[in-house]
Amino acid sequence: DLNPAALMRQTLLGMSRNDQLRQVIEKAPVSRDVVHRFVGGASTDEVLRVAGELVDTHRLVTVDYLGEDTLDPVMAEHTRDAYVDVLGAMSGAGLTQDGTVEVSLKLSALGQALGRDGNRIALDNARTICQAAANAGTTVTLDMEDHTTTDQTLSVLHDLRQDWPWVGAVLQSYLYRTEQDCRDLSGEGSRVRLCKGTYKEPESVAFQDKADVDRSYVRCLKVLMEGQGYPMIATHDPRLVEIATVLADKAERSEDSFEFQMLLGIRPEEQLRLAASGARMRVYVPYGDEWYGYLMRRMAERPANLGFFLRGLATR
Ligand code: FDA
Image (cartoon, rainbow, N blue to C red; front, side, top):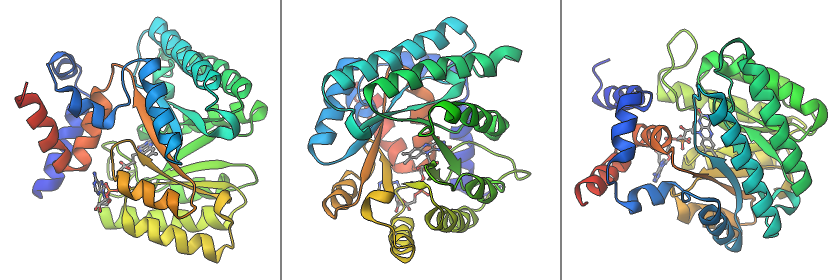
């Protein structure tokens, strides 16, 4: 592909999975401003403060403890414990009632990639977190990673929903399979976060052209809005936000029967506008030290973010 924007995106997504580069860049003296625009701090105390500020400005929150592709069972347990800790802290601060602050998990950070037992280990760790969320009166949503993990993640979702029907899933409109997955997950009580998808995926499984990904997003939105579940519209795309509003009206949905979601630091003024309009608006807040993969995917999505990041490196 000779299109420079596509080439840049592919290169950055390749870099996001490069472990040596990760070690160099995570240790580089990156300006705190750069990381802090997109990451809600390193510790439980810091993310507690960021979440509190968002809630004070009428936004809901989902918190993600950064980490992915763990190949060490001890790290997977550490991640599990970090979630239990942050849920306890948010609950203690009165932030979790009715799902005001919930959590998002990556199964690969909880052990999914640990060989043959990986799925069971990730499921056990996720169960502990779901129980902690239930105690705090809030919910859990499973992030979706690359397409090789989609079936496993949906199978873990199915198991968790037997005990906690409020566990949510993320579906990615760039995958050909997703419209059908939306149908399968559009029943009563089903929470689905619809996004475009952020991994480097082959043509055999995913639309490559942005316009096709957007068209698929609209088809998926229709299915979810017309269904009985709770759609979570995760995009910064103004056109898709507008279309979602129209489709919600058409399906005669009340304002509390779906929500918009955006990432920390991206279009904050639009987040405030939607919240002020009476819509439910949730901000995804990642925190912790392992910000490399997350930040590289944000760079791949928007070269302007890359400039911001490089300037931050250069000004140290
Ligand atoms: P896209 O990047 O195509 O941008 C469309 C338009 O939005 C732009 O043309 C511009 O108008 C506007 N815009 C975007 N960024 C902007 C900025 N910085 N400033 C101003 N305008 C901007 N992915 C995944 O694979 N698995 C997952 O589990 C998740 N989880 C997730 C949760 C939540 C809450 C969100 C919001 C996103 C995810 N994602 C994700 C990421 C998602 O797949 C996608 O990569 C990003 O959201 C970027 O895609 P957009 O829909 O924002 O559109």
